[in-house]
Length: 333
Figure 1 (tube, rainbow, N blue to C red):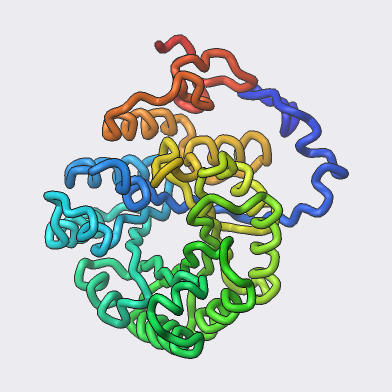
Figure 2 (figure 1 turned 90 degrees about the vertical axis):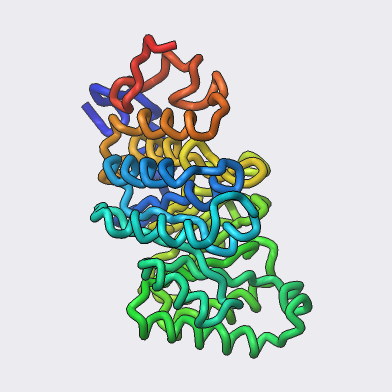
């Protein structure tokens, strides 16, 4: 037996060839950040019961970071799910004693109030976003210095309150590098716990992800994790995620069944299996539960998975791996 040929799969030996892997600088450990209840909530109106049920299922799967949509997102959707109900749900999930850490998103422009609102709902793990395109400056009628000052103030305040901050950069793949790095520097100096490269429109290439991950690692001295959040508008979410991992990203953002705005996000189950089988990465998951989680979300999303969806599509009954190892009965229709 070898890394490419086991009792459960047989894949390309080239994946472990030293010449093939030359230049790869993967991290020692990789963690999945599930964003289904935030990005996926753009296309599926999860009920309160479904949110709780799904969070429990993810925790049992072995996912240790679960992100739930922001208060602002709830307000924008104008559904029956009110901000007050949202806060109650957050508190309920946080108080369930799950092994997973619960995150919610806030925006730097909200100031300290955004941090306070998250804390009132019992959440101290915050995905703090700051769009880094100069068009944003014109929209806000602010200078670079004003944005830097607010970033520093909000993150400093959040850290004083005991928060964990994942500093999240929407549309960074469409932004000027010098401005992005100025904002990043302000965030790290204020105490951000990690930095997230976010390809909001899915327009970056694998080469772009490699470049940005390495640039962020270089400028932070590899002292804090670099995270990646690909979107699938050009069908490159998986390729970009793997490129980011190969360059050193240690946290990968995914959604079950690839849910998300427009063409969706990186599929959690596809990323987890690919990293495990093709790269030899043990994510600490209960892999036999992956299929159950995927099916649970399929029921909640109320539309069927594509017949040819990798791993769990209804037409996938023969593959270079044992479907049963990943939770699917190969004879199931």
